[in-house]
Structure formats: structure tokens, C-alpha cells
Image (tube, rainbow, N blue to C red):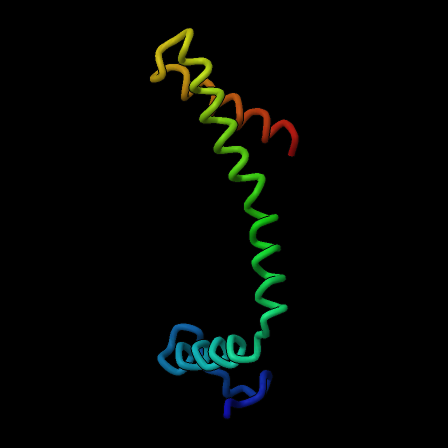
Length: 91
């Protein structure tokens, strides 16, 4: 239906034809995706998001525990800055 890549007749990504072409490729891709591939993508998404979710929980727990000693308005930024420094140091 669409001209082959490299033919010189490709639609720009920002043109109406490019938008339709992206929708066409997305529809074809989603239609051909089986149950096993969907489960694999869901597992991958969960494994990718798990460290982020654990980080949010750790920051909340750290701020909660630190707020027993100092006000929460001070504890939360301290914990967030500490977490950012820890991540940057590891990278």
C-alpha cells in the first residue's frame, strides 16, 4: 500500500499522510501480536518499572521515618536530594 523505504516518495512524519501511515503500521502491528507476545511485553514492562516503583517506595519510607525527627517539609527534600545523589554517583 505504501511506497518502499528509500524510493524517495516517503511521507513526512508531520504530514497527514505520515500520520495515516503510522496509524496503518500500528494497526498492522497490533493485529499480528499474539497472546504470548503480549504477555512477554507485559513482563518486560513490569521488570523495567519495578526499580522505579521501589525507588518511590524507598523515598516515601525514608521521608516518613525522617519526619519523626524533623518536619516532613524538610525531610522529603533531604531524602529526594540524597536519592538523586546516590543515583548519580552510581551512574
